[in-house]
Length: 325
Image (cartoon, rainbow, N blue to C red):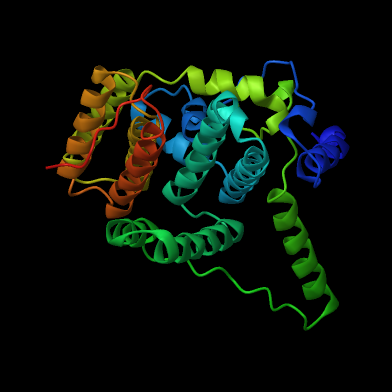
């Protein structure tokens, strides 16, 4: 990872200089196995003697929110770079549209995961608070009434991150500088390499072929929905057992997180067939019926669904589902 830092700097310069064009981008012919952050959660489910232990362990080893924010921000910047370059060469939009789609899914997946996962550290609290306020401000400025309402529900009560007012003594100053440096580094991650294959990473316009392959190989939405539905049924059984301890609560929360990650992937990816449309409608009905689940999770699903519909609306390759009756 560290050895690629210099490449990161030069690649950003190449795609952002005033006279840059899409033709001047040095495309990486290597194939990278691109994984988004919601899909990456599947890799964190361990083998364990029981399902409850499995999901309790899963909940304990979820990724840091700061890392999710860094990946989401990197892909947001890449989308902005691509749009800027396409504005100079609009005849290339069709050739690059699936790179944009892939980067959009990577961005949205990271941000949805950031809002889905629990806060477990001061860095997590700072990240959730900062990004939650960003979401609310964006929804107020650009969203309609429904989007603003869903965003407010998805953000929920923001955690209060500890302030970094540590200037009273040298040790406090050093802690503040270290914290700020750590956060700044996490928000500027380098591009991923082959050693990170299959894990969520950071991808640039230079990796266009890999991004196109990622978008082309969309997940099986029906299979994802079936897995999510089976998991929520098991959660219902665990919740009905009666007296629970802390480990049981952790297992239930972990299972809920994975179930909604699967449902959000169903929502986020555009429908490519009538079967996909049917699956998305079934997922919407399931989420609507889960009125005892955390409302924040359900609101995040609604935002993911809207993001998927936005992608689907760009081309007749996809099918829009439309609003519920």
